[in-house]
Length: 105
Image 1 (tube, helix red, strand yellow):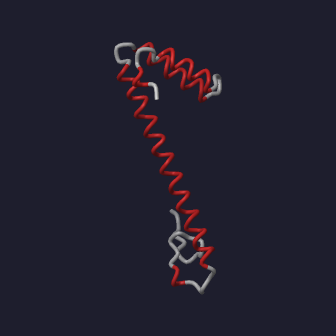
Image 2 (cartoon, one colour; image 1 turned 45 degrees about the vertical axis):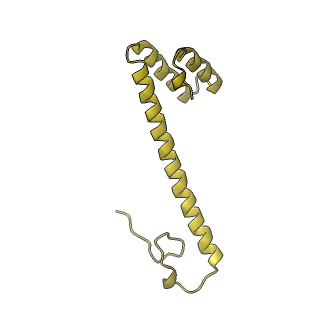
Image 3 (spheres, one colour; image 1 turned 60 degrees about the vertical axis):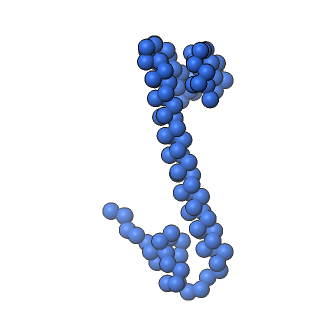
């Protein structure tokens, strides 16, 4: 179980009035850094959700052509394992998605 560190000056839960006066620039930097970390996490979550939504759209588009959908998934695995680079992935996708312009971002 994690302990909350409320009285530590760098803690985001720290209350300003409970510490001796400090340079406000340090508190601003801490808040800014904390906000940046939160924004980065939110962006990653959005990117992940966007990726899931896109793969779902591809799956629906190829529901009658499961071989093409499996080729798409295989291509994603090859990119993740670095067997192919993004140029190769783009080439593969443009070939697989021929006639499905709505899937090309």
